[in-house]
Length: 415
Ligand SMILES: Nc1ncnc2c1ncn2[C@@H]1O[C@H](COP(=O)(O)OP(=O)(O)O)[C@@H](O)[C@H]1O
Ligand SMILES: [Mg+2]
Image (cartoon, rainbow, N blue to C red):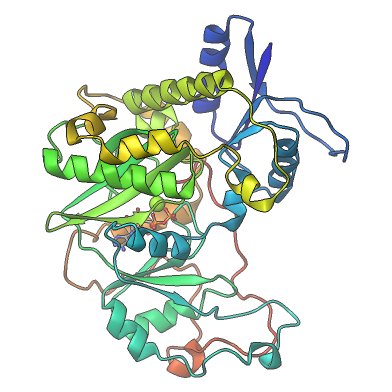
């Protein structure tokens, strides 16, 4: 008998659907259940063949437990070692090297540092920062967002250098990126499962977050050529980063799909939020991945960091094949939905209960995403007023200081 453990946050319908469908298909040979874990011992043996992790990106204890389980040969979806290593700025930089279109993006030194970091500790830091140069490169309007964020938290649109400083002054110890704002004509969010199966979801980020209204079903939303390019980009990114469950978001402008967010290890799959069609697709596709992985021969665990980051041997033959696969072949498993869907209002309301206020606030700002003109209240989402707008105050603090902006918990499921 094989065992599949599910590690979850607040989401309900997706993990339960996974458990039900795995147990149904497993017919006693494969059993799925919620993981239960307390104090973890050094000598703890293998309890699960696979763990599907939906929450360790927000719970360090879980992540440490998962790394330990990986040493016993448990396959973890997604790889907890890679999550520990990844960040959005690295993602963007890698994507550029892989030929995926990325809006101009700069990494910013933090505004504040943890206690004990003094100006002496930061002697390598350029001071003052060349704000004009950074803004000249990225352009305005721009989006300022954490380099490892999720759930639309601490994401703001800024229309001028003054607004940038105002927001930057509130970011505390968060490491931020500044990214060219793409005044998109179209927007899609794409699931990618097992680094192969792609589902392109037309998506309207201007609608309320997790309202059930963001996901649209329109089989003709993208031209065939754009759908093909996006499918290829999604696979390229997820294979390079090794995510088995991920979403890749594209803001499309003048026919170019710019990838803006592809570090989503536990993407939303709740029934009321994504709708029945997408919920069922992602559930079935993850279940297929689980059974595929269970059927594959187990490779011996190698105790080196690079083996931990990539525990499965690279399937060079398969990769070479997919690299030369025809457009028709590549599009076989990329699906654009055909059927419509409806969500009961009470289900949608239930889900929105789970969402923290910050996430809703951002959609107000991003509601102007499709517009090109600057909006005066575009920075309104930041919870606390900035103390100053001067370049001086916007300079990274070189003295020891605690974060003025304590990081709050991200909502689950994330976006
Ligand atoms: N460069 C950009 N251009 C236009 N809109 C953006 C850009 N970056 C982010 N956004 C908007 O902000 C939302 C949240 O940003 P995102 O990068 O996806 O962060 P998170 O990881 O928190 O979801 C996106 O869904 C999109 O609507
Ligand atoms: Mg996102």
